[in-house]
Amino acid sequence: MTKIKIYFNRITGEEYPAQPIDMRDVDFHFIYTKKEKKEEKMTKKKIKKLERRKRNKLDKEWKEKVKQEFNNQCIICSKNEIIHCHHIIPRENKLFRHQVLNGVTLCPLHHKYSFEISAHKNSLAFLLFYQTNFKERYEKLRELYLNINNLKTKII
Image 1 (cartoon, one colour):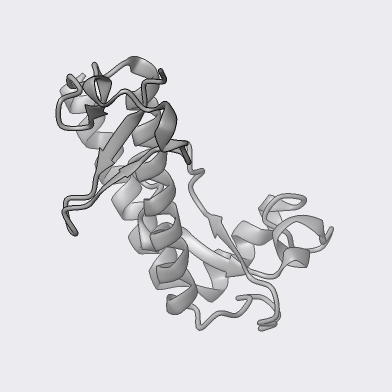
Image 2 (cartoon, one colour):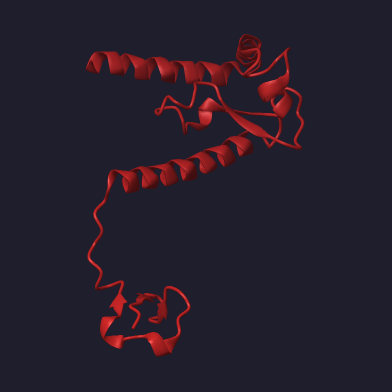
């Protein structure tokens, strides 16, 4: 006799097996439902996985908001075929990772490949371009960054 797991659908109230089974092999005395299963411990691995899912969801939302802000086009050349989102303050800084103010939209050329103005290949030229063409936005981001760093130093 084979032991099988039966799952319970809360919405429809139906029970169904976890995998296709031959009913002749089932011993109905040993059917386990999901309700009867003890609550699993939250391991570090599971917690990390949940955090990663949440971060990925927030990243997608951030990307969509930034694209809307700049009308789905590159801020340098106005192309709109393929658009990347770039963080001004690196995304490793968790406080600014999902701030819409910290994002700009770029075509692949100006994001990674151009030697003239590129956020990755020539970041100084890109920063100068950003400062001159988006003064208000740059100043708001700079002010926010300095305020948060001042708070950090006061706490420490």
